[in-house]
Image (cartoon, rainbow, N blue to C red; front, side):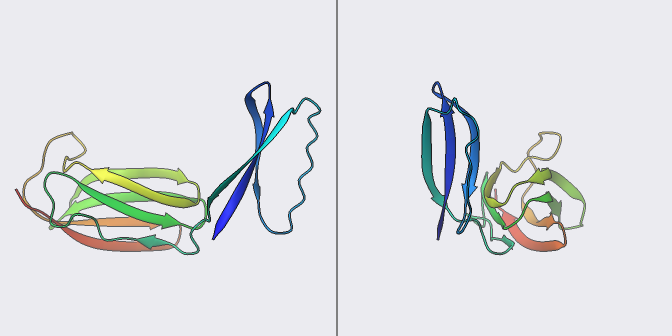
Length: 137
């Protein structure tokens, strides 16, 4: 499904925006609004999800995708096979939506890591998921 965003435009600049859902009534109270722009956008996810990285195995980088149906404090962390933290890719509040992040096979210090199995975990509120991936050099 899809949703819509209504943008209030004054003099070519956006001064406000509203998400449009079924049954909502929007009142524009700014008398300077000269244009309303409606943009179609993909609907938000309906559930939390962590996808398998792609490609897997990978060298030197891989894409990790995840879905958030609600705004949450999110952490996406890479661990080595011993469970030691290698890299924190995401740490902080994120709005609901579809996310993709490219991991360049570097640790938190910016140093390329060696071949092997790695684990990535996504925590978003009460949601927690873990997947495995393989770096081959």
